[in-house]
Image (cartoon, rainbow, N blue to C red):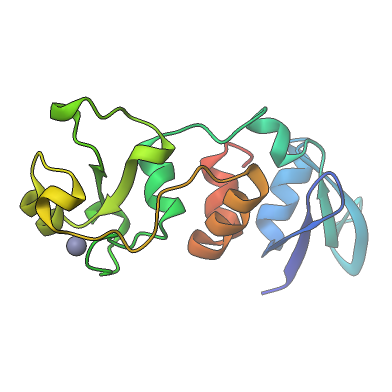
Length: 166
Ligand SMILES: [Zn+2]
């Protein structure tokens, strides 16, 4: 299948998509064709080689990536931050580093992706109380950092679907 290069509104390369999705984006007014191929699906519509999103992905998130359990799991690449096991998307749980029972809050710096077993074993204890080390300190990703992580983990199409761009 013909792959179409997708550029963000600022002309940075986001990745590729298939031509059907590219045409859907153009028809919905979400993207414009920058370079057309020789192939046509309709006398008035060529299959594009390169498209550009009309609205920058950055602006969809406004100033920052919102905290959510799904976004924390994506930041941690669906890996348990205690034992390192890779998790299926629907198996990833979120652990509060400082547990809620001890006043820990929701937020980028206090939540990590964890497998069910580690989450269960840690219970309402801090990592040092439970003698369980984190593989890295949780952090708040910048929009571009997060976007690239998500594209790497889920592919561009999944990211565009999540963002409601498709
Ligand atoms: Zn684990």
